[in-house]
Length: 92
Image 1: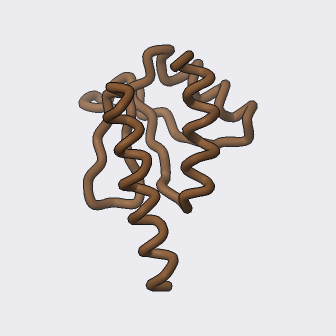
Image 2 (image 1 turned 90 degrees about the horizontal axis):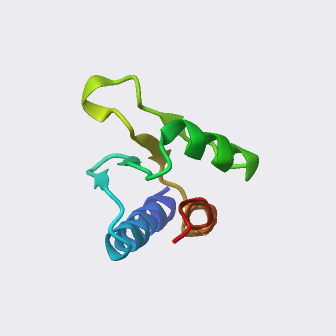
């Protein structure tokens, strides 16, 4: 379990670096997920990610989180897969 937790923490740091590097509005705290605000909007981004086999949750109906998606943090490989799909959708 400890090695998996360490891997997920490393993956969290990696994805946060990518989000910062490309100036993607996001929020990452101590949990096992992060929020991001895609330019394309949450519904369209969620739909396109799903077509790539990546499931995220729209938080658009939450007052303080309007326009955001909730993304669970996984392994580095999983986060790299998410990032590749997200970059294509956002045209980064």
